[in-house]
Length: 248
Image (tube, rainbow, N blue to C red; front, side, top):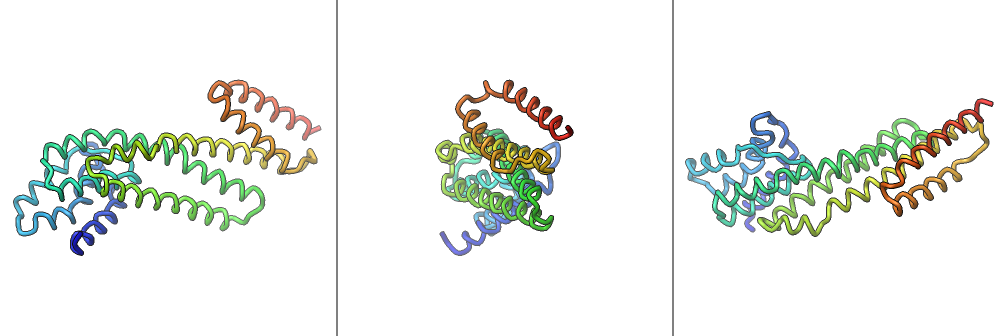
């Protein structure tokens, strides 16, 4: 890969951070995707302004993706354009992946990773850490995961091209989402335990509650969704009993 092409790929990756800057109800992030592809298209169609304009118009079409996984689409389309793939095939490829990238990212990041990091930071804060430590911990952990996901998605798209779907299947993002949700459930249990014993009115330390959280996590992981209703009832009864004992 030439230095010029490498530089264009780097600029395209940096532009993925702005892919939602032109979000609208007509094309969603379609214009943003065209913006991320523009550095590479300018290299490919250098000296051919009509072809460049036509390529940009092809990519300013309705498209949707999670912003952190947008690099998959950007990298894969860059690879396809560089290989001279048929424009209709590129459009079919984009239509095939646009829905899955949005749902995968929503589950992994918004429903799983972000709440997990927030719960960890809140637990540290409830244990007595100063506010700047809580905020700093959240920002550092969240952005490590956020940046890693952006870099990984761009590289897997650039390397995979039209075979990126196979690479995504091998990466098993749904499985990673389940693990993140499970870790978030454990963190929520730990935070509730810290919150309940914060006043120390019951004379119970933190470690018993952490042990209960671990046992609850293991049971939930083993039994699955069938355990949610009895677990919710038992949790509510336990909190009520502890509250009464604490006020007695």
